Image (cartoon, rainbow, N blue to C red; front, side, top):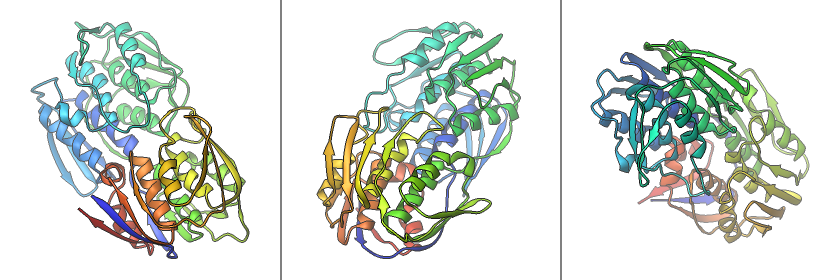
Length: 415
C-alpha cells in the first residue's frame, strides 16, 4: 500500500493524541497473569494492537473489543506457544516471555520481529529469567521453563522491554524481586500502576530500583492507556515543519520536557494549556540544533526521525546523534530524494543542513517512525509525492490519513 500526498498545503486545526502504543501492548500482556476479566480503555486502533489481540485469542483468552475499549479474560489458556507469524510481526511481542513465564511457568516463543532499526539482543531478559530459576532450552526459539519462579536481584540495564519482562515475571514469583537500573519510560510506570490495580505489590515506581514482592494471585482491573508522547511530539514537529498553527489535545506535559526543551532551542513557538499543546506559526527562522537521543527523560529515539525532517527547515547545520540504534538513520537516504542536504558521519550520526525547500518524490518507509517521518516530509514538500510501504505507519498510528486530512493535508491511500 502507498500514500499519494499533495504537499505544500497550509495546515490548521486540532488533533487528539491516541493512547500509547508502547504502553498498551505490555498492559495486554499483563492480562495473562490473571484468570479474571481486565478492561483497558483509550486503546488505539492500530495493527500492532490487533495482532497482539489475535495472539491472546490464539492462546485461549476471551477477547472483546469496542471502539477504544478492550476486555480480556485469560481464564483458560490452552497453550504457552504464541503464534509465530504474529510474534514475528512486532518487537513488542517479546513481553510475552515474562507474562507467560509468570502465568504458566513455561513459554515457547519464536524470535520477535518488528522494525529494521538495528540489533536488539535480549540477553538482559534471559539472564534475569535464569536468575529467577528459569531454564532455557533451544537455539532457534525462546524456550523457557521453571519449576517455580523465585524472586532475585536482577539488573535491567535500562532496557525498556527488559524491565517490563522482569516486572511481568516477578509479580507472581515467590519472594522478592529487586530490579536495578530499571527503565523510567512512562509506559514502564504505566505497566506498574496497572499491575498494582490488579493486586501486585510493587514499590519504587518512578525510580531506577523497583522492588516487587510476589503474590499468589492477581485479580482483574480496569485502566486507561496513557497518551502517546511519541505521537504528541510527532504532531508538534509536523506543525512546526509546515509552519502551521495546530492544537494537539490529550497531551501529558509531564512526558514532554525533552521535546519542549529542544523545540524551544530550535526556535519553535508554542503555548501550553491543561492537557493541550498549541504550535504557533514562526515569527523568524528556525535554528539548527543538536538532536541527541538518550534514555528517558532525555529525547526518545522514536522522536529523532521527526526532528530530522524538521531540521531540514532550520537555518544552519543540525547534528543528529542516535546512539541507541545503528539503523535509525536509514530514513535520511529517503529524505535526500526530496532534496534534503544530509551528510552521514557514521551509522549513529549525521548532519542536516537547511533550510531546504523539499521537492516531491517517491519514497519508501522501513519502520514505524521512519514511515511517519517520511509522511511529514511529503506533506512539507511541494508537489505530489508517493510514500510506499505504509503498512509500517499503520502499525503505530491510528487512521492517520483521516486525522491529518482534517488539518488540511491531502492524502490518498492506494493499494
